[in-house]
Amino acid sequence: MKRGIIFDMDGTLWDASEEVAHSWQEAIQASTITDKVLTKEDFMRVMGKPMDELIEALFPELSKAEQNQLLEDCCKVENAYLREKGAKLYPGIEQMLADLKKEYFLAIVSNCQCGYIEAFLEHYGFGKYIDDIQCFGMNEVPKGENIRLVAERNHLEDAVYVGDIQGDYDASKAAGVKFIHAAYGFGEIEDEVPRIEKPLELKEVIQKIWS
Image (cartoon, rainbow, N blue to C red; front, side):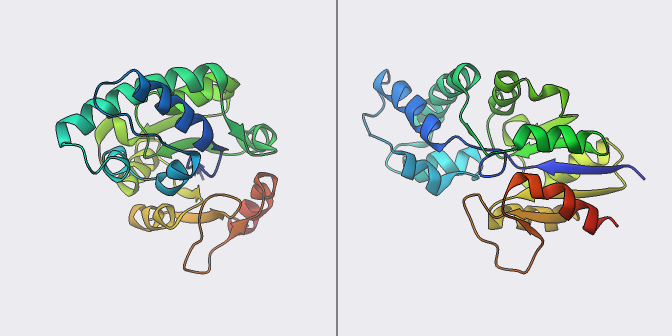
């Protein structure tokens, strides 16, 4: 049976809130659209949202055209910044990926822009562990549809999504896959679900689910 583990990014594999805030501030300083100052806390509040909802939440005072242009400018700077500098990996991420890769198909599905997952993989050299990626920026559809898309196009007979917020759990249900809560991340889950307190616990929890 072909089984796959599909990961969320923010709050699951790394915490890039501080680095994203810094990169966006660089882009904003070069912009004529706004001079608003954003903080790490601002991004922690919106991490995980699709990009169109994220920019609306951060800049509700701007027109849609201004939001779109600012988003494009900020994402370009953000991707380059993260590709060069990386962000804060949760402890044990590479060991976890290396161990799981021996037995399972691994993928990443995120609500981010194009280039964001690639920046993560390129900076850390993690491309050797990840078999497929999909993000909101590629097709602008909800995360649940993208999880299902990855599972179907890779012919996964069973899959689990690992994420940290309620929206991740809701997306897993919409996709019809199992879910594990990365409880060290940004959010809580309303229902009782399998959970891990650190990345290196994932293999044991996965084995229990698929025993």
